[in-house]
Length: 88
Image (cartoon, rainbow, N blue to C red; front, side, top):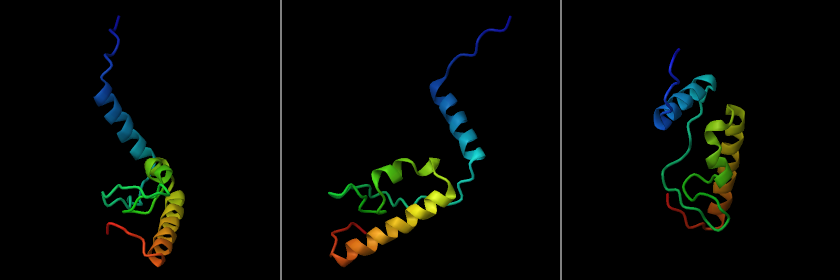
């Protein structure tokens, strides 16, 4: 009789995360510049993504990521037109 496998949270998490990355081709890099400060609209002042867009980045398909990048660029332009106080 084989003994049950001991649960190792960190190493199990790493192996699951690696397998997820292999299954899903993430060819579009995150636009994060490590500023991570939200404005009053809950938009990051560094990359112009919403909290939901930031949180779900690694789950999204490349098509969804392209749409997010388009939206964040629109936000950047709009906020720049209004003399947005930004970090970069």
